[in-house]
Length: 86
Image (tube, rainbow, N blue to C red):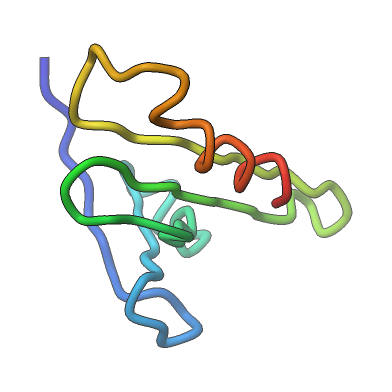
């Protein structure tokens, strides 16, 4: 299966920020904003997304993306602590 989306530089103009949409509906609202919080470009990336829904409900997500599916808890412990602090 495949999904096609569009990505644009985020509204704040920062290099690590993207607005991503996967449908025309999402494009109407500016897409979802994603920021790369931390990465080593080879092993992991910590990504954050937050948006206001209907102007008063805050929805936030964080992801820890890793390349190696067999990564150990000890290897990702610093990134998990970072996620807890966000």
